[in-house]
Image 1 (cartoon, one colour):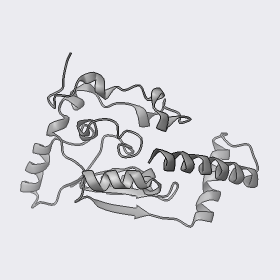
Image 2 (cartoon, helix red, strand yellow; image 1 turned 180 degrees about the vertical axis):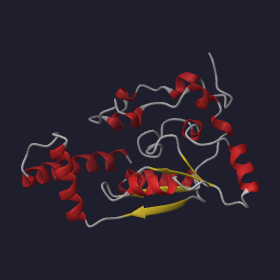
Image 3 (cartoon, one colour; image 1 turned 90 degrees about the vertical axis):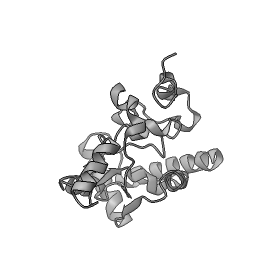
Image 4 (tube, helix red, strand yellow; image 1 turned 45 degrees about the horizontal axis):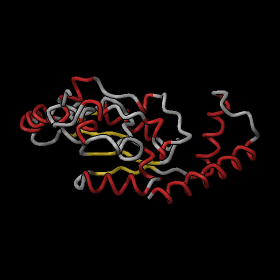
Length: 196
């Protein structure tokens, strides 16, 4: 069996998520569930962890802030904006998470040259609404700085509704959509409380 430098079998990085009870009902075909390239997985143990994580409300400006901050020459973004390690991918080893960040050595060199000012960051807004994800984040990265973006919940809901209508994924009236989402959220929260 082939192992990565961390000693973890390669097969452990590719757990079939359709078997996971926690993810029942979640679309697992999108980019959130894709894996980093093998060479990044292999070098995971030598990669930096983020210094900064952006969390916040959906449609609250996290994507814009991530993009603006990422334009700064001393801020190094994760290879994917929403890694979702602490909420949906926490069953994978920490090296899987590290695979999305720059090499630790390159960060150290940059910090020496730039007077310790270079940082790495990622943005996974859903960490805000999942207490278990925040606990795992705090335990794994106790020194990480968080930026929390909030938005008026009524304006955010209305904005999200119109975005869904434009994308043709919502055909119900605003009131019907809100009631459907409220029932669905109650079911998800009940399942999350049960799972711990």
